[in-house]
Length: 252
Image 1 (tube, rainbow, N blue to C red):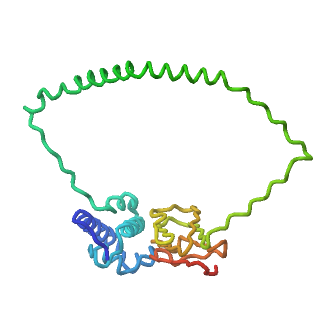
Image 2 (image 1 turned 180 degrees about the horizontal axis):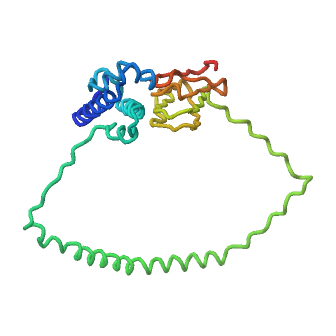
């Protein structure tokens, strides 16, 4: 179940009413929308009626809005962006009375500049003799150092064959994702989030883990996976929200 703040809920209600109005003007039934967008009927009804208890996380809601709007011939990207994925935090402002704005405090930066300048000059005067003495000592030490002798290069007879480093062992789990369409993805390796966002069509990414690797997608039909360079398989149906976990020792 999705948890929305008041701003998100209000925006969802407006978008739901607008999408339903556009659908009815085109004489489309929800069943037809479902067949063309692969969005479950329950999700479509919840979108139009702002029933948050039947909707997934906000990032999935945004993807459904985009797909639904594009079917109706609308600007899906713009409508989806109008629904905020993260809660909107209020911005607090403090008004300063006009009579306080011309107080003597506004001259403080000028005095501060003078003080800083005086301090810098004092530091230069204090440390310059010490620095000059140190540089002079270093110069004397440098002049006393003997010239470095060049080592003769090794002849082929005396050259030794260096040992070949053994290859680094690969991680037990390596999963490659290939996207045939745009999809939201969340990738977790050993219970730590490695990626969360939207990847575009044609993207190919590889993630690795030691114990387990979990992939969650909002459009399973657009995501193909290959475990440890094995056979590539589609995660699910278009528009399907799906989560898959690969564990160490699992065969492709």
